[in-house]
Picture (cartoon, rainbow, N blue to C red):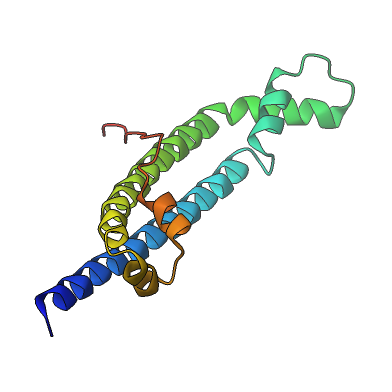
Length: 146
């Protein structure tokens, strides 16, 4: 094989690894966020966060069921706040991991685009799809310290 063919293969392998790492990071982030949301629902006693906050702020209590809900919401406040803070932290960490893999994919994709149609054939994507992947993400969140 020629040097150019070896380079093309290396670029293709780098792109494939980057693409797969990005996909795994996105899937992992989604799983972590879903698990954190389930922990929030458990901490609120089965309510979504918005409904729990509404119950906590409720001033007019008309039934004993509403009274019970308000009392439970108030007593669960420290636990819910801790779970929400943990969920926010986890989301930031996972977003940072996704961003890291996405930036690597953007760099690898730029290399692939340099090979024109060969790069498209190598990845199985159109030039428009590759150009979209080659762009750096606009929002660059950072992970919180800790």
